[in-house]
Every structure is written in C-alpha cells, then in structure tokens.
Image 1 (spheres, rainbow, N blue to C red):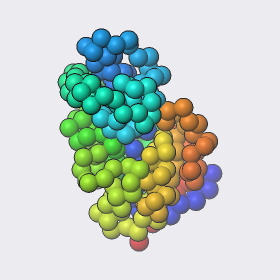
Image 2 (cartoon, rainbow, N blue to C red):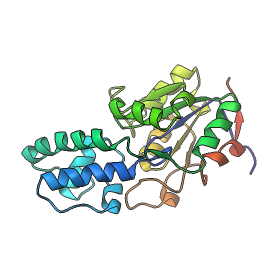
Image 3 (cartoon, rainbow, N blue to C red):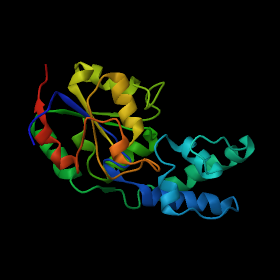
Length: 228
C-alpha cells in the first residue's frame, strides 16, 4: 500500500475500534434487564445498541429499536441500574483489539499527535484507557460529555484539530461506525474504518470512509506525517 493521507494527527474511536468492550457492556445489560424482570439479551443484540452513549444504549435495550423512545418512567428506572452495574463490570476485561498496541506505537513513533474521541462518558473512558494500558499513548481524550455535542456532530473532531493546531483535513479519523464517518465528513477530516467493531446491522463496506484497514497496525502504510 502507498501513502494516501498527509496528516499531523489521528483521532481514534474507543468502543469497537481500540477496545473490545462488548463483553462487559453485555454483562451490565443483562444484569439491568434481570432487575427489570425482562428477558436477557444476547451479545449480538447488545452489540447493535452500542455507539451513541449509555442513555441511548439503554433506550435501545428497552425498546429493541435503534431510535426508539421507551416509557419515561421505565427509562428513569433503567438508566441508573445500568450505570450501577456497568461500574461493576466495565473494568473486568477491557482488551485492545489485535494490532491496536502495535499500531499506536507506530503512530507515535511517526511523530503523530493522537486523540481518543468517544461518545462514552469520561467517568468510564479514562479508567478504561488506563486499565488497557494505552492511556499514555494519547495526547488528548475527548469523551461524550467533554463538549456540548458528541459524534456524529463534528464538534469533537474540530476541537481535536484546533487543539493539535491542524486544519481538519490533516486530522485522520479511525472508527468502526457511521458515527465516526458522519462526524469526519462534517468536520472535513479523512476517515478510515476497521472491519470489526460495533455498528448495528450495517456492513463496513457501506460506510462512507476513504479506506478500510484490517487493523491499526496497517494505518501507517497509508499515511505521510505532515504537521503543517
């Protein structure tokens, strides 16, 4: 592969791109559903709910619909239950996907500024990065509650580009879902997608990305560091 992107920084999604957090999220989801007297959810059903933060995940678990709105009273009961259970489970086994550790090392060695940009709240994001022993690889972490808007809004990516002193066109985005691609397109950033991860029923080939990479280890072959 030849270099295609001249970039000075990289913004990488967390759930489904850096870390395989599904087992711990699914564990908390099943505990919440049990408390509510509802049938348990299979991992595949929980996977389809991930990507827009915990409140939306809980709404999807309650309704079985991507954009469903549950009864407000049921949601008010369910949300704190999930959050309580997730606090007990989210650090059980946060595993980086294959190629992540090596890929981050290569990107840092290339002199690129790195950011983690996620819709997960900071209360979970920062401990997860630390537990996976990759927190020190990032110059900046933008969580779902760090700014007034989160992905697919372009604000988090524009914020990263500004902090890095880059034009958005020099900030490469790496993710696994349409939240990442839509945010990147709106911000004017190039975007790569990984074929694994969490994107509901959609296929990675259907995402509006510039290229699909097998894992983070293959990213460096597609970029030329350019910090201007």
